[in-house]
Image 1 (tube, rainbow, N blue to C red):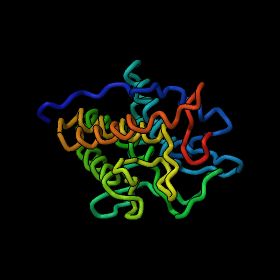
Image 2: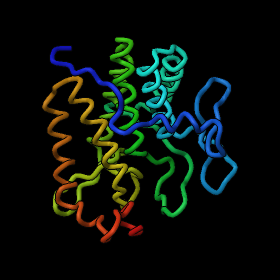
Image 3: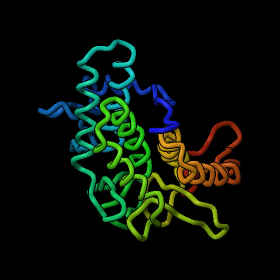
Image 4: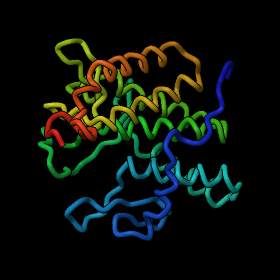
Length: 232
């Protein structure tokens, strides 16, 4: 791809995720896919954020060691993402059929903007690693959720001032979770790095403008708030 930039390690180290199978919060299924234990329950689910982070952790280890075991684990998680994206026509999402503490989920299933962004970053790395276009096409489907409002099944929310938010939990009212928004933008930025398309650069810059205008709202004087709905 002309002008394509090689993606390497992720922006935040994800190797910590490799410890999950030996902890109380995660385990591997019979196919080597990471499962996540829902908070305050004994239920394990396929949680796309954790699957993407586990994929990135294995990808980083593969880059460090060239050990095929990590490459295989990376591609197993990535292939799960490909097989489980729900096609909505001009976009695709990973649906969540459960709720999480502290939030009023006004819709089930719901969509996770952080998962969309992380999955894009995983899929684009798999595309560059294998040259298999199924990963690129799936990433394009996932990106489409950033162009759809929450009411349309996407993760975008436009506030009264015209600011564009990408919601980690795509529910109403929107919680404006800070880290989820940033992880979504990482996925968009990876798309720009791979394609050099102004479409993705403009989308990334729109999100950055929203952050620049509203970042002060997360400042509690000594730390940053997680969201703007609960103020914690």
